[in-house]
Image 1 (tube, rainbow, N blue to C red):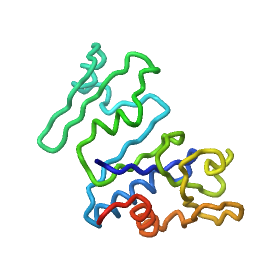
Image 2 (image 1 turned 180 degrees about the horizontal axis):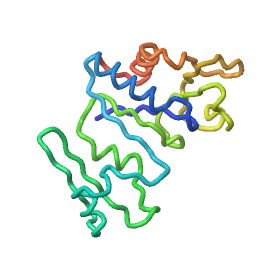
Image 3 (image 1 turned 90 degrees about the vertical axis):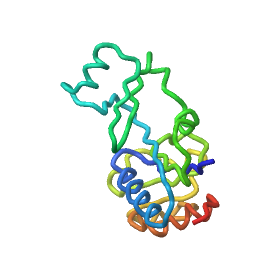
Image 4 (image 1 turned 45 degrees about the vertical axis):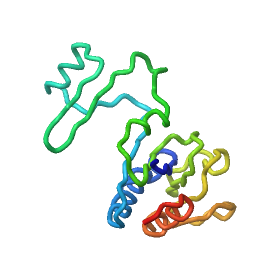
Length: 169
């Protein structure tokens, strides 16, 4: 069973950079890592004019893109309310040591909040959302009772995730 750990934060907080850096760090340590990124907007893997785009535009419910290097399945939801749960998406992944989840801030998994000074206009998530076990920020937060890390302390954050998740390296 894969272990799940989340990285959450408001827009421009450094979530994606931190997730990508953590993937590289964990991979360097010999772990097999997968990621799930929650998007709040429409997105496409294929570009207009490609064959797969034409298949989707014609109404295909799913389109599989397959090559010798990678494969992907694009699934069209019938409605916006059909968005699959985090658990459903995890069940579709191949076995791995760790799944890093970007977003899904209301999920019940353990997570670290990324905070970048000057880009935080909302209330910090660690004050209102359960499951946040640490904060990674570019400034120290005086009233925060969670373990704090420098946003670029990728090795330290990775050590923390390994420790509290019980991952064996």
